[in-house]
Amino acid sequence: MDKIFLRKSTNPFDVKIALASSKSESNRALIINALAKDNSENLQNLSTARDTQTMIRLLQSTDQTADVIDAGTTMRFLTAYFTATNQNKIMTGTPRMCERPIGILVDALRTLGAEIEYLAKEGYPPLHIKGFADQKSNEVTIRGDVSSQYISALLMIAPTLPQGLTINLTGDLGSIPYIKMTLEQMKAFGVSYDANWEAKIIRVSPNTYQSTTYKVESDWSGASYWYSIVALSEFENTKVELLGLKENSLQGDSDIVNIMSHLGVKSTFTADGVLLTKIPAETSLNWDFTNCPDLAQTVAVTCAAKGIEAIFTGIESLKIKETDRVVALQNELKKFGGDLIEVEKNTSYKVVTNQPINSSQSPITIATYDDHRMAMAFAPLAMLTDVTIEEPNVVVKSYPSFWDDIKKVLSVEY
Image (cartoon, rainbow, N blue to C red; front, side, top):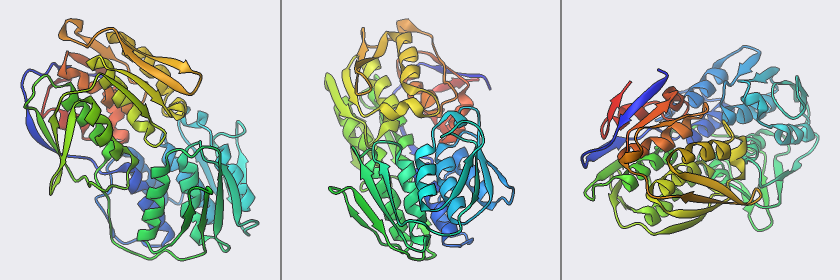
């Protein structure tokens, strides 16, 4: 399937959506469960996303080469896991995956005693994990303003190290909710920690993970696209209930509740999840995405389509994702009169639009850049105009049932 056509919404809707499970929670639970040496079926509601299925496959594989395809989380978590479990592995992935940096994590693992060799460009996959015989240090220093996945990868292996681990974070702290998610999931498996966020120090003593039953929550990242759909719907009586979400979530992307309250969506938590209804939107938005960078694309599209001028900060990490998401957003927003303009270099960006989108601009064709979030972030435009999404299968990375769910509110043609 090289493209999918979404016909403009012509009716209000009132639907329930059984959201995909959280990829972030699933991947952490799989690593912790493996470190607990538990092969039982005690993990419930695991994500069907390709990234998670890749994690499951590689944890079970005895092959020396671990090909993560395009799964950045899987690459980082398994690099630490295979090191801590003293496995001889070659880590590789797609050409784009091999352009995404991993040097900060490898440097930290080498400090702890790992023998790791780069097989091509220094600081990037592919790499060869050769062994981890003795722990040489119980302390590492790592930047807090880079991918939180490096920190989470180290935290999850920390209790299995003979001396435990102290992580000193430097600079600004980004994506703290993802680090806290990791720590709380570790706690669910019986491991305690000491985190001093002001001093930027996290300590984990040597310990043993305990087998436990763990149920994964639905995915707040996936929920964000439905928030955008409600925000862009032209019908005031539109309603969507997203099932399986918790009000007190471990996921940083649950911040979409607060963001979208400014953009025209009210959230009411129910016994089964959260009900989305329309409310008046504000005329501007100023938001720091440091703790929820995966929401930036969705919010940018929503603001541009509604004619809401916005200032974004904390989106620096978008440049090293599945694609350079800043450039991709700039290219695609321009197709309906919007743009993402850099205000201060690598610091702040302005979302602008000439006017709110309307059906006279139909059809709009969106390129996806091998990036699942580009496809899903732009799909809600079909509330206002006909949209063609190129290479729509990219959604399998995180939300495989996305197009099937979209059919509940839109006419879809392949």
